[in-house]
Image 1 (tube, each protein chain N blue to C red):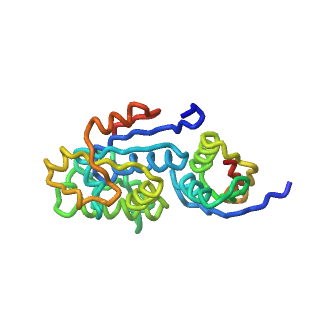
Image 2 (tube, one colour; image 1 turned 30 degrees about the vertical axis):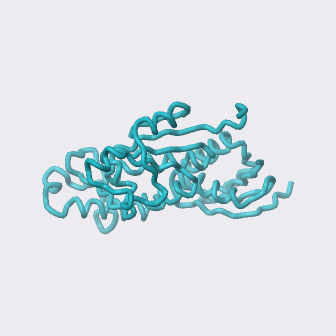
Image 3 (cartoon, rainbow over the protein chains, first blue to last red; image 1 turned 180 degrees about the vertical axis):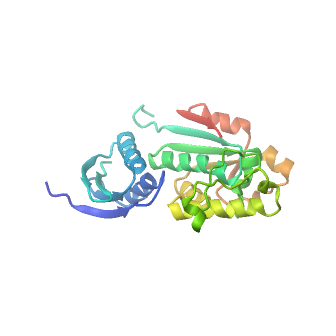
Length: 78
Length: 170
């Protein structure tokens, strides 16, 4: 499935709670169904985003591991 | 309001105003705000200055033997040498230096500043409540605080906290 990216958010080199805070602000600008491409490079941010996803109901559609960072595709559902 | 519409709620009392202790309330408030929780922070005693327009939170190694900060730059960065606090912390100017070092280290490592976190909290409509009693005792005026701050007392906090899912005293 081709994922259409509406916004790219780079949270590499950031610590808690910045990844989910930047996701929140990005999602405020988006409509339901749109997807954010989120770049992170530490385990803390990854865990945070998964918790945030479970709490808010906005799913992580796909995870892509790069050499030194991770890309998460997060969809806004409501 | 149906159960489904009910937002989760976080209630925090911020009672400490040093740079290190200023982080937990704002980090947790913004994380909860990002999950669309309702959040209120009640600033009392030494936490109250965190509402000031211009923040001046500092950190002291005095009486803080657990402080493990390393030098953030220079040749000592690689060495596991804590900032000496036993003797040095009583030297005039040492607290200012420690504060500057902590701010520099945090910035270098990608940690948000207290100012940034507070701005984000305001943007998320986090309620920031200043304690009137502390204001009067320590001589703060409402004009000293950011415009978004409101004034309240213990009952104001408890009314909000009565329906909170998480309540923290920091």
